Length: 515
Image (cartoon, rainbow, N blue to C red):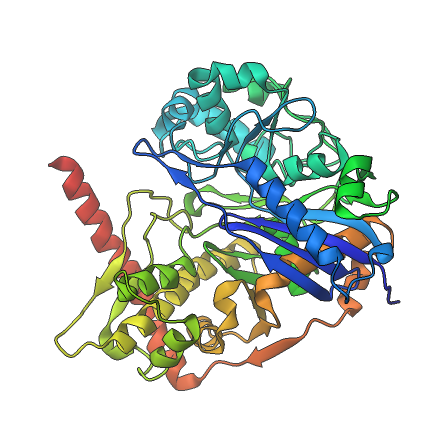
């Protein structure tokens, strides 16, 4: 079955929102990308203006609906995906009463450590056991999640808390701006670790877990099931954007889930890898499970009775963006295409140059915010081509290090691997992943808009146009890349070196701490 119905898809990344018009079969017709700044301070603060997101999204949607390729009368649904583990304080109408405290913000760490800290990997053993048993994870002692963010606001911004009716995840906040309904799902609230995920049909927060960190649920939006239709778009929003009054809004999904839909990896154990600002490896799995040692868990998934693997590497394709700025040194930046073309002139192994991408610490398979990356084994003959290639290879080796633990976690070999995200635009980088993993890699067509596509496909399930199983019949255009045996041997050694680099950096970190 095919449909000509359209979806207004929004993908709110950390760098800003993508907005697109997408068919319910997953074809992205038109889209725009907009940048928003993150405001940092010397205390570890990292905030964004949630009102700016909304303004940019409205302006973008208005333009896209006037595009001659778009039939506004065919647009039936609004779907939101994007970043999670952030907090937007809003009033009863859904308007922000303070800045969004993002997942990069660590100011709440002091309060999180008071709430759950202890001597077992930094946690209170009794509380950690209770959280993992019920939810699959636990609030971070770094404060970089909703528990730390809400505790920060309660302790340091009582004015914001007094004005706030709801503490919302960004994607749920945007859904409320469209339809006026405050809601969340097990999936959108996964980073708070406050729902009993042993039974995803139980649409309630766990009051004992909330009480254990000094919170209540009075300012948390009600939970609804996966694939819920929340209600129609508000009349004034519909008029402003040029939408029909019968356009509906569906429950939001995190970018993790939209990536599974958009990559075509919705079957159990079908695997995708997101090579975006951060990076992760995920697949749907049938049951809840946790590997706390390597920061891997199975969390609420694509349905009300399934799960997806969650893990995160703090710096993915951001590594190449960072090095792009270093090479420019304040001048004109080399394009990504030119950078990868130059990297292709360096042989596999980058003439011995190594790069570790721990520019913001790491989370999986080791949780160490103090870990730092950089280049190793440079020489007088090292070229910029070698260094660029080393960045590509270092990110792939870091992912392969995690991949070994993910395969152990799910208990089986995972292949093929579908690559999405900005980094997956480079066929060279995708081939390096295939060689490093020793697995067939599928480079998704238009990988930067995969999550816009995924949000629309999830909306088609919510509207009953397709079942989740039927999504397998939809074509997902890919370029198939297979491992090159010679390069694969080189990269097997490179992955082993990655572990050695970590051990040496960990020793240096401990040495610095003693001084």
